[in-house]
Length: 231
Image 1 (spheres, rainbow, N blue to C red):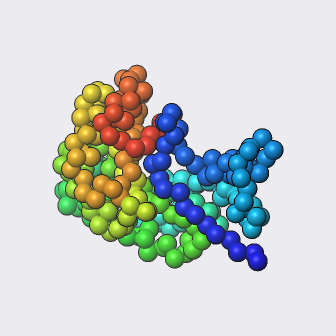
Image 2: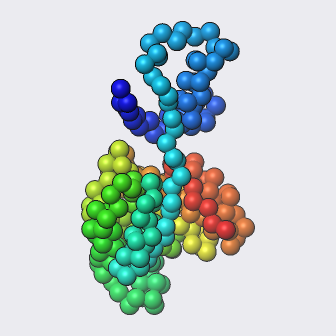
Image 3: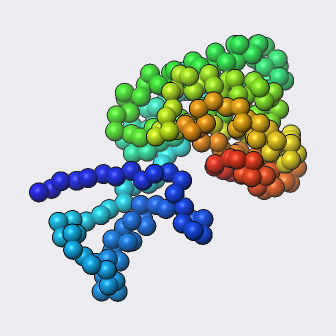
């Protein structure tokens, strides 16, 4: 009768070899059941016309915590099915002092305002599945306590859930930290961030020392969930 049922697969399900379980695997299994190669019973499937995997292409955009740039960024996403809006602002002591001439509390407010500006514009992206990503720029040169504080402030505005997690991206900008130090920072951050089940921890390593891969591997071992590469 034309009924369409949409299921959302639980994140983090893996096969025994470590590969992720995806909607493509569901489609493959369905086609196998119907094929002559499968001896599985097809009883109970007669009312299903088709199983399709939705468009899994996600557009990711990077934007500073400035309202004029956020406005143009949201405009650019009109019609996208899936989008990640990646918000960032500088957080290290040198950038706070030299670039902005601001104190920690002012930098936190900058991140809060940027998050709110994005959230206020979400009604204009009706039909788009939007995930927020936030980066404390120069994370590896930022006090880890302050990195947690500012990320927690962003989360308090965005209100992520286990079903709609926020990405917290932690850059090793110009690779100021050695791989083992970066991994220690990642581990400390993960242990101290609140509402961990609603967070995807992302690595963003640079390669100025020539050890970007090592930093990424150690960061994953420290508990990160995702890698965002830099070329």
